[in-house]
Image 1 (tube, helix red, strand yellow):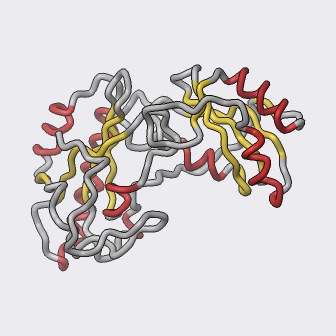
Image 2 (spheres, rainbow, N blue to C red):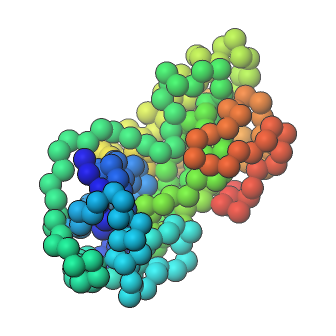
Image 3 (spheres, rainbow, N blue to C red):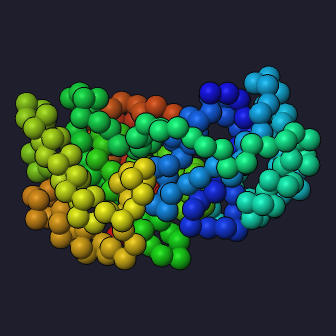
Length: 260
């Protein structure tokens, strides 16, 4: 681990790079892999003392053109080689090019693992990447605020919430078994429709999978639709980490929602 300026590349694109800072590398890389269905890799790292990182980040991106039409920050229009050349010149620090990374833990910024659900109700959230080829990500999670507010920071395209599903049972006394049912449905979906995505791109479905295919599998499992515009229910956590809380009974923000 260490503090670095990093440059990341979505493995499906060669015309943009994400440049940022991290005091606990490779924590950012672990986080980033769940944000894109194509896989993500490290272009280069520039070692910087922790107390110099903020200034170094500002210097690193001088002269870059920001990528437009995406809510994700720190994406710039350039090739990986151009990024290495310009950041190196800006920082006057030699880069570690294409650094090798030891086995990293499996991690998803959105899903909640069964042991962490508590008394909260797990739902199956469906997001759609608005790129040249539409790609869906299916997320089993009790995290309600996250589904509406959390940006896919390491994806160069906008990603929208388009649907959600839940168990028809709403008894808190059977919530553990019903949450397990949602989890099992998610595992079946990703096995059937996500076999060709990188293993670290957790929850993403294969290119070409249509919403009708996904919904057919979900419906056959017995899960029912959840109204995305409904007020926040009390079976969700009061607050999720890292995002602004939506109050119980309040209508969720719809700026990142495009109901299918």
